[in-house]
Structures are given as structure tokens and as C-alpha cells.
Length: 514
Image 1 (cartoon, rainbow, N blue to C red):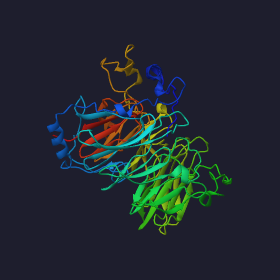
Image 2 (spheres, rainbow, N blue to C red):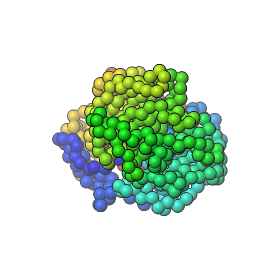
Image 3 (cartoon, rainbow, N blue to C red):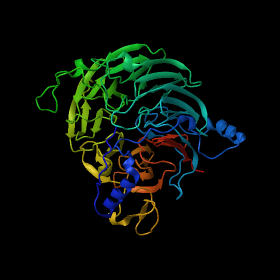
Image 4 (tube, helix red, strand yellow):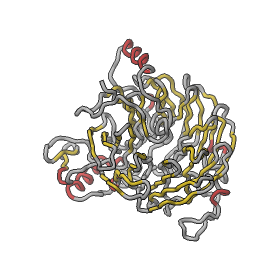
């Protein structure tokens, strides 16, 4: 998750912009210095979108399944990499932005929705309830919702909603709440198939921000980073019955491992956290399936069928209050890792026998993604580097060397071209005197569609960017309607519809070319 530190991180007039606006907006925190308030009411989570007559709604619902495109049924999309194969989209955007199809006020949370066919599922937290809600992707209307009580409170004052995206199959919906409630529902009806209260079943040390690793499916196994002591960091469940199949990773994996090449070795304790906030991924390397989990201590590769450890690599910050949150990026037989908190990046090359690796390079000052997973394209990795918002940069680096090719904070003109309306606090182009979107991406997120990135900055700036290592080239920019800080969930694209979530709002934009 994230540290909200309100500091002016730029100089000149832009520094004034940061300072004044962050004062006006409270930097997204309460007077006590905690995270955004958890005041949304799910009972009032009514659609704020375009009103439609019943016949229009029925027509839209009928058309939803026929609309061309692909599903986005899991975290970071069908390939779990943030890459979309959709075509037939707008090559650029109108000045006013793509059409707003619908929007809804929802409970708090940081998790992106997931989409399968005409069903969109979002996990959110209004007051003392966790709600898994299934919506019509075309209209935003509710099909069903499943509610259960929760008294989870984020220890650092961030909101108390879900950090994990729903996982959808043709018949099932799996969710993992911040309090460790793992639930399998019927996708058609929302009826409970099975559930596990992982916090009660396993001994789980208190995590910084609750449970935050989205489960994945590998065949008939549901893989969950439970984080149970002493050796149940990763647990595989039978996806249909919920029965535990295997448990792995923990004391046996990491006790006595050398830390940071210093000669010092980890001495395991009962309070040692086992997992962090990076979701696992399974990849085929040298013909073998590798379950790659970037946990608290570093990367571990498991045989997904048995949970047997293939290899491990120490990769974590020297700071105690730190997390690994970006997912590993696999390119052929190489694995790219990145984290903030002065951890940096590393590239591993897996041996042909799948039992070990070589470190191609590592750099503590390299790309340092906080939670947004970088994306690989044509020999380069693109990601948002930086622990705090004001220092964050959108970077392009060479995969094989880690060398920085280009970087930008999102504003490519002189800082003195920025001004601020003294009454509204909105940002103004000092030359044109027109209101513009928030100029900096901060710790943004993105998806790749063909040769374009769709970028969402954490203050709601939405941009279309050319995916090129030659230079940063922005093709369009707008303020995403109805979204405000913090926008920390990655964009979701399905059948030409772009779904964006802020802390307590969900919108749908139409990107289909006419």
C-alpha cells in the first residue's frame, strides 16, 4: 500500500502549486493526518449516470454480451500483466474526453473491478459492511450483492475497503477481503459456495494494511497468499470445494537466509510477516510452470501443483515499515522485480533446470515501483517509480541493463507555466489561462493497448500516451469525470469500455471508435 506524506516536492511556481493545492485539499488526509475518511454509505450507492428508460436499459443489457472485445476477469486483465489485446478503439480522444456511460458512488476501497461478459464485480466497504456487488457492465445497474460485516480498521489510517480485485470464472466469483475473509460465490446469483476466515484458521501476524494480495487460479487450484505462521505463507485451495490442497513458504523457506549480501542471516520469529502486497503470478519458464510469489522477504518460485520450493531470492527493503507490492514481470526466462523504500529493481535469469537463477543486474537506485506493476514492451519496462507522490516519475528503462531511457512526472513544459486559481484552487495553464487537469501523474497506474498506454494519475488525470522508448509522447489528457484523489486502482478495459475506480466512485467511459 502507500505512505501519504504531504510535502512540496517540486520547486518554483510548481512548488507553490503543490503546496497551496495540497493545503486546500488536505492532501487527502484528515486533520489527524490519517487516510481519507470511510464515510461512504453503501445504501446510498446509487447510480449517478445517464438516466435511461427501462427499454433503453433492456436494450443495453442485451447488447452487452454481443459487443466485441475481451473480458477483464482478474487482476491486471486476461494475461495478468496489464496488457489488453482489444482493437477498434479511439486512436485519440476528443477534447471533452471519451463519453461517460455511467458512474456510481460506492463504498471505499482500492481494488479495481473485474469484468466477465456483461457482469462487472466490485468489492467495496460502506461503513461496517463489506459488499461484493455484481453490476451490469453496460448500465451500472445491480444484478446482485453479497454483504457481510467487517470491523477492519487500517492501522495507518487509510480506508478500510478491499485491496484485492475479484477473480471471476464462468461460474464463480472469488474475493479476498482486507480482514482475510476468502469467499467463493456463484457468479450468476451471488450465492455463497464456500468461505474461509483465514485470520481465524491461520496464525497471521498483523500486516501493515490488512490482506492485499489478489488470489489467482492455476487449473483447479485457487492460490492465496494467506501469510500464516510458520509455513503457510502461500496456500492452495481446491477452487470448487474450498478444501486446502497444500501449504508452503515461511520459516522453512527463509530462516537462516543471508540478507542483502551482508553476511547477516535472518533469524525467524513468530512475529515475522510472511507476505506483503504483491499478487502472485504463474508463468511457464523452460517448459515448467512457476508460481512466482514476491512475499515479505523476497521472491519465491514454487511448483504450483505441490507447493515445493524451486528457488528463492532475497529482495526487500532494509526499512521495517516497507512493502513489496508490484507484481513480478516475466519475460521469457527472466524475472523483473521492483519495489520502493530504497529497494530498487533486479533482473533474474532462470536456469534451464528451473532450480536456480543468475542475477543479471540489481540496482537499489533503479526503478522503484510502489504498488503499480510495470509493463514490458519491446525490450523496455515502463513503470511509475517513487515512494511518495511528489517524487514519482513515469519511467522507461532497458530490461537487460536497468538503464534509464526517459522519465517524466507528467508535465513536460516549464514549471513556471503552471498557475492556480486563488478561489477554486484549480490548476491553470499560465499562458492560456485555461483550467487544466492536475499536471503530475504521481504514483500512477496504466494499461497497455496496442501501441498506447492508458494512464491514470493518482489525482484523476487520465492520459493517452504513445508506448515508445524513443521519448514520452502524450496524445490526449483530461480530468477523469467524477474521480478525485486517491485513484490507486489500475484501469480496467473490457469490450471497449474503460472502468476507472477512485476511492469511493466507479465510472465507465466508452472508448469504442464510432
